[in-house]
Length: 298
Image (cartoon, rainbow, N blue to C red; front, side):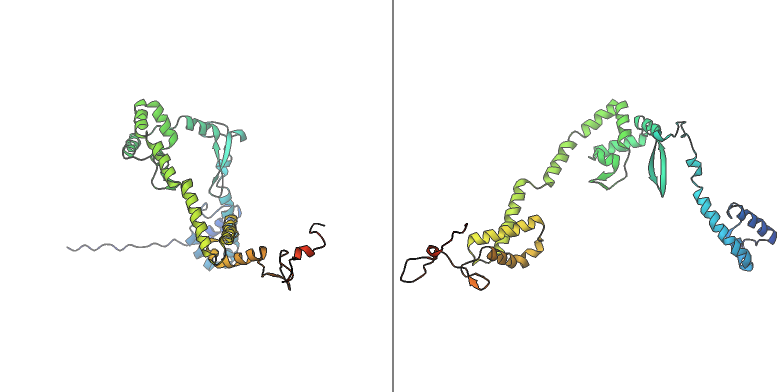
């Protein structure tokens, strides 16, 4: 004997009668939503297609009533004058916190009582904490699930709950102290090793300085090369020069140095720069400085 399954019949929503449509219109004018009037969206759309005048009046009412209904969703909580434990929700006993697209209210007294006496952890949580400590995990990872500010696992219990449980169970507190005895020193050692020492910083700066000095043309005197390298290093420190621009702008620093400290071949406009100690005539001993009739500071 062969079994033939009965095909599933999909039932369509029944249409609206004109009488029910009129009752729905009265409810919409009173500010009710289709949900409150026990009418399905499919029934409304089917009736709208055959009655366009009804649809033109009903659609704006449905949209306005739905918007008003969404605004009334928080009326129950906004109108509460006491919390669930009977504490008055006065302004001095309430603090606001962001909740979705609005602000929520919390009772300060309830929060304080919960902080002082949180619910005790379950046996499963205690076993998970014990196993985590035996495996070398830190209390921060156990209570927050974070390492260096990043979430890497789910937390087992909060710090406050663990603190209260340790206060009520001295043996468990001794176990935690013994398991975490070296965690502080290990953490300090990791932080120390992750930070460059002063010697490393000075060595890196010296290496940068000599790399910059090698970019300066070698035909220049050593003191000039040192001055130009120091100017480049200072620009890097002040942020006016980027590291990837050093190679292409060394020539500019050389030119700036030559303008500031010109050689005897440099010119100011059309006049060459001459030394006052230079002898004026080949057969004499008089210098240009001897012929100056006014002092520089007169």
